[in-house]
Image 1: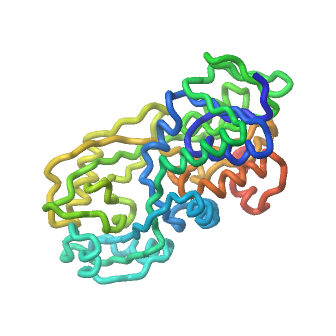
Image 2: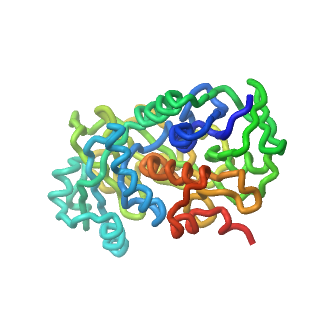
Image 3: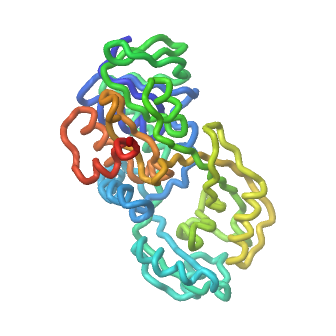
Length: 355
């Protein structure tokens, strides 16, 4: 099957790119798993906090607010940052970077009742954070792409990539050829590049684990903010009458279907308990996902300098949903050669890793 653009990867990056590009060109998306958004995208904390992340992500996230609102996937959540006495040195810079307003410990405990105000040395809040309905956003983009005539294939693992004028990609569902290839393969992005004969960039997946625990003492957490410990030691987020607590680890991993480490979870839950009034009695469930980073921590979006028809859309580092609308427009502008913001393009370019 011949198409203008082939996208490898069916997470939020690939699906959003398919939606943007399919309005202007024929698109085929290839996803290894049985459904879209199976790996990192299905295990996101699902929060829109536009000031969270490195500068290019903040720029893209702020530019994505309108698109996320237009897709009707945002709902109010709020965010709370807390510090213990030993963490106060880190607190001011983090609160300032996230545009949070200082509050006292009693107000923090009123917002997030599990907190023990006697253990909170500093706190700050913001009202600009929202929950993202991640499944709805993925389906919004998939519906848009299909409506534009794109083909989104699942159970289509890539087994070979070769040059054939443009690109020829082999899968169990057949061979696909295209003039342009977009690498949106998440943790597997470097492997896709190597298959294509393109030099990998050093992208590395990192595990992040999560535990779902009962809300303490029969409380209803629905209106509580996302609450974070300084230095990303832990976070807690309401989830359908319970709490998701993460140790916020970033342990380097090889690409795989991730699972949590029990000891890492226990250490993270201990950090959460050190700031709260209620011990964790049991877990309802636990899971892990992979957040993929480039060596400098910024995403890699743009044409490879040695293969301009091979476009990287990888290294989101866990910020893919909150920046999706603007990031997908950036990739579409790159692929369609419509011109992009020069400073942002330099910051995101894969050329920064080429000697």
